[in-house]
Image (cartoon, rainbow, N blue to C red; front, side, top):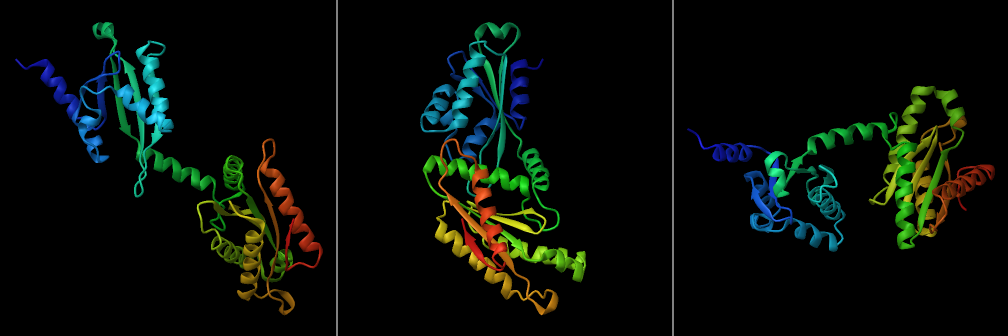
Length: 303
């Protein structure tokens, strides 16, 4: 007759899910092979979170060093061990410099006769494939179909993030608003297919100026484009806008009446403050753009 404990241990060791059993104090009393292999893949000794180690203390130590995921995990484990809830589920990123990974952590109280011991099962399941698929779908929803640039929705989200970062660090956020001059006339003269090709060329030129993680080039709408420059003073943002304007001229895209296609640009820069909205920055840059167009187009003006 087979040993039931041995069968169950082999069953758990055959799973890809990383599983540990903890007692009511948070001490690990069992781990499967996948749990041990995970810690080894992180460059750590499997005993760093193996049997005989208090997993709650491991989480608390990481949380004290600023790890938000560890803090949420410790809170969830305590809720299950105290019977405040029967189950805790948390999805979290676990990226390194070369690979993006996501896991789903589940903490479940044991049922039946084992419930009297106050133990809980902790598992970590790799959900990277699902997260990457969701990310691809989300990116499509955030992308302008014609130019491939982020759309207005993504612009608003990104600008909000940079605004919050600027508020925390008291650093400037700059915004460039650029508009193709006389684009309706261009479309009327050459047709919408040529007009679409023109928009793509301008978009590519704009994208070349988004060089840092804190930069984002986006299609604002129609023939209007935006460039967010996080942690960037006004002087640098204005130089960037002028480089963009000159670069468009040098592309030598022919307009009507032997003119060369040009853009007008408005630039604004603010240090975010409590109670202010990123919309203030958009309005300031848009007003500067409006003045540039009123004063003859093909120029850069700062708010």
